[in-house]
Amino acid sequence: MAARGRVLLIEDEESIAEMLRGFFERAGFRLMHAATGEDGLARLAERPPKVVLLDLNLPGIDGVEVCRRIRASGSDVPVIMLTARDSEVDKVVGLELGADDYVTKPFSPRELLARVQAVLRRSEEQPVEPRSIDIRGFEIDAGRRQIVTPSGATIRPTAKEFDLLWYLAENRGLVLSRAQILSAVWGYDYFGETRTVDVHIRQLRKKLEGIPIETVWGVGYRMED
Ligand code: CA
Image (cartoon, rainbow, N blue to C red; front, side):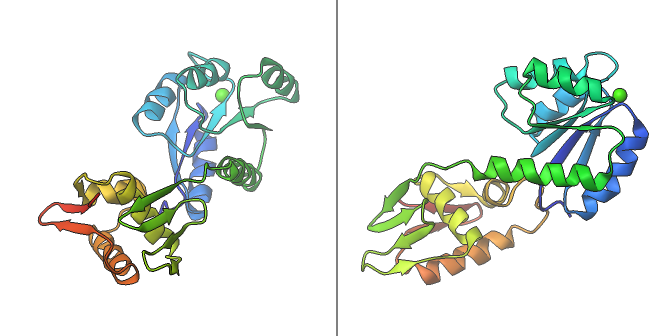
């Protein structure tokens, strides 16, 4: 189960990784562990996590440098610094590294999880530009997450149905494979079957009669323009 996404822990103390792994996994996160800053940056580039937990004192390049490189790469992933002493907090804050929060060791897994949830809430609350896409008279409104049909009815699909519809609409004219759709709409951590996509498409066709979602046999789907 990793429905809530991946958390990347960059920490050289194995005992901390062990303490956090089970706790975060029970809370629905997948904990990825890197023991050095270099390894952490490589992991981050490979598969961006939802949150980075970054130890300040690392062998090789330290947490300050890791954080700097994360921001220099253009990533705005939330970073929570793990510091060993209160005196280090001043250093972290003073450097204006672009870290989102910090905790001082020793901390409880529960406390850290609460911080993670708080930074995720903040990053998810950022206002999204309301946009809408018109597909043959269906007005798909991303701000209100609803669709006004050509006959003027307002339809509010489920969250996943809307995400799927929006993804197809944004990529209208392109053939999208089921695997592509799954990873874009359900996330890379979703281990479900590609049949999930078919079920949701069926629901959308039922709710939005006439929506031009074309089945591309053996591949996936395409929203006609
Ligand atoms: Ca350390």
